[in-house]
Image (cartoon, rainbow over all chains, first blue to last red; front, top):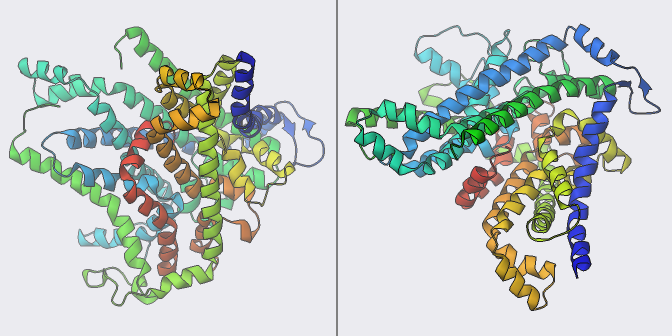
Length: 297
Length: 280
């Protein structure tokens, strides 16, 4: 009886687990290993020890890509999370009118392809006929930079677009978190005569802290793997050109991959892995601290 | 939430700020659709109040986008990839979730730990071997490459396990006494109870598959196997036409199915994202 049921369980699990092993687990383990080899994908890889990493740190393209990736995560994620929190508090209030339509509008960028988002923003930022420059003209700014060409402006806009895109997702999750806060906390604060700001500062924000930690860390992890948005906003063709102003690690991997530098590409993968690992470790540490503090959900 | 209403000026200011921010979510897409209906020279002019709306809607831009970049072919590819991935992935994740939630077998903890571990692995930085494995299986440049690797996910299995855990054991036990197999139990008892989670996962899988960009870019070389996002990106980068209205028409075609699905299933969609908040 037990045996027959075990067999059934294994038959339910065999295919899904095989997929996970073949397409996620094995590539990660082999990729970590491959960072120590030189290989073009054909023939036998040759072991080169840490030389991919020493190539990497001496590559003038590596440090800007690393810096841009880290800056992108650190500068885009916290503003999106904080703005989403503030909007969620407003929308969650009983007196707020039009919750459903607001939630729908904020959520749109979450479901829409980054390709569409990237190109519509390229069009909004267009030098000649862009809506942004027209709006700036209305308020008297007549000679704006070329947003998609000059220096760090493209990267600046990539960060703005990322914040803009991320708010709705965070807002929806915050609304779920706010709905779970115990009403009696607010009632007690009101009895104590706390001001609106004090309630926000000492009750709502700490109660939503687990969600804040979750959104920040998962946001960082996906930010460190940014690719699509940079690829599209800088113009797909330009992705193959080296540009230290907009280069990010994943774009750098992509180029090494297309050049057949698989060992070097894997070494960059290890760098991203370490970044995301640091973010994950932070998350686990934060959750553990919360658990030992025993403050509940 | 606080029962006190703030004074009217503050309420108005808060509404103003939130609605203004919400408007910025809509403006780009509204501009996209407006541009898609303009003539080329009309779109190329500096915007002004007079020419915000298209003078004579150019529906031909949509036909031009479809013609210039062969979008109908890529549309079919995307539909096939997204539908097949969604149906098979949800089925596999749900069965695996059922096994982890409701069945006893040797090695369960280890296998579940392995499943959870895959959730933490950033595939995007170690895609190289995933590519090489697909290549050796003959998937590269075939639609399978965009389907098979996504037929199960650590997150999907975990999410299904959580949902199916809420199914009362007594119901399953009763079914078992009646001689039902585990597949029957899953289909007749667990599936209806976990249905909201299953639809949420389905919508989420469809969205990810439809919007996928990085992986298709890696595994597809030939033109005819591209998915819609790749084709639109190529079109928009000026490979086929140099026209913002046509580009915006193509982008509109790309986003339309998800917008429609979103408005039809908004509750399930948002709940799905709220529950599946681990990934985007």
